[in-house]
Image 1 (cartoon, rainbow, N blue to C red):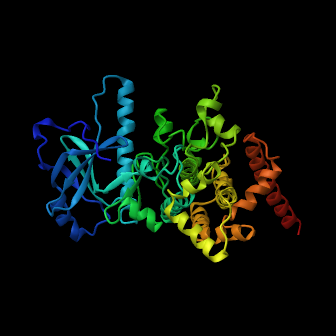
Image 2: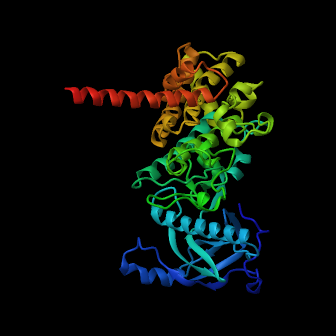
Image 3: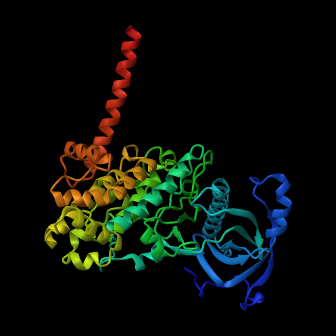
Length: 453
C-alpha cells in the first residue's frame, strides 16, 4: 500500500524520521461544536510527517503523519503542477474543484462507519491539504493477490459475497444521508480493507471485512451544481471496467441527473463483485470492442457469462484446499447428510449455489438505470446468500433445490425471457423504455378516468 518511490513534497525537510510541519490557514470542519474547534485546531495545525510513507490518492498524495498526541493522521496534498497552457489551466481548475469536492464529501460522511474521519483543511508548502484519518491496511486491488484461489484471479464465491455484502452496506449508508451521496468512481483501488484491528487473514476467516471507501474527488453531494465533467469537458469518475454507461458518455439526455443517482454506485460495485467472482471485469473491451465506445459496448452487449471458481475447477478437492470456510461447510454437510458426493457432483452442487449471484449482478448491471436494485436491496440479498450458503450445500446433497436468496432473480429471469434471452443487451434497454412508456400511459389513463368520474 505504501509507496516509497512517491515523490517528496519538499526536499528541504529531508527523509529521516518524522519531520515537523505547520499547516497554514488551517480550518476545522464546521460539524464540530464551536467549543471544541480551538482545541481541534491546536491539535492538528502542527503535525509530524513521515514523507517516506506515501500513497497515491486519486488527484493527490497521501502522507503519513502524527498529531501532537501521537495519533496517526493522513495528510492528502493536492498535486499542483504549473499551468503552461490554457488546457493545463483548465485541468488545474478541474483538479482543485475535485479536491474541494472530496473535502466537502468527507465533511458530510465523517463519523459514518466505513468512511475516513475528517479533521480539517489547510495548506502545506503552499498546496491544499486535507487532514483526515489514516487507514492502516491496503486497497482491495492490492489485497486480491492474497485472496485468489485459482490462476485466473477468482476468489472463493463465499468470500466474494461477504466482501460484496460489506461493500454494499457502505453504499446503503451513503443512501441514508439526506438526498444521498454518490461516489461515482468505485473501483478496487478506492476500496480499502482496514487491518488495524484484525489482519486480512482473520477477516477472511471471520467472514466480515472492515471496508473503507476512499477517494471522493468524483463524488456528488445533494444540491451541488453541474458536474465539472460537463463544465470543462474532462471525464472524471469513469474507470471503464467498473463505471456504468451513463458515466461513459456525454450524449444522452438528462446526463447530470443520471450521474447524481445512487444507481451509478450500484453498477460499479456490482462490477467489482463480478471481478472478484470471475477473475475478469464484466466486459472484455479488447476482444469485443471493434472500435465501439465503452458506452455502446455496455448498452448493446450483455456482460460476459460469469464463471465462478467452482464451475471452472477441474479439481474441486484442490480448490477447496484454498477455501477454508467453504471446505468447513462441505465437511459439515457430509456429516449431516451421511454421504460425500463424487467430485464432479460436488462441483456441480457448489456451482448451482453460486449461480444465484449471476442473476443479482446482471440486475445491477442493467444499462437502464431505473431498473437496477438499490444498494440496500443488494446488501440484503448478499446477506441471505452468505447466511444460507451452508444450508444450500446440504440442499444440493439431498437433491433439493437451493433456497432462493436473491429477490431480483425471478424478476430478472422474467425480464430476460421477455427480451428473448438474446446476447444483444440493447434489448434490455428497449424493454426498459417500453416499461417506462407503459407506466406513463397507465398514469394518463387513470387520470382521465378520474376526471370523467
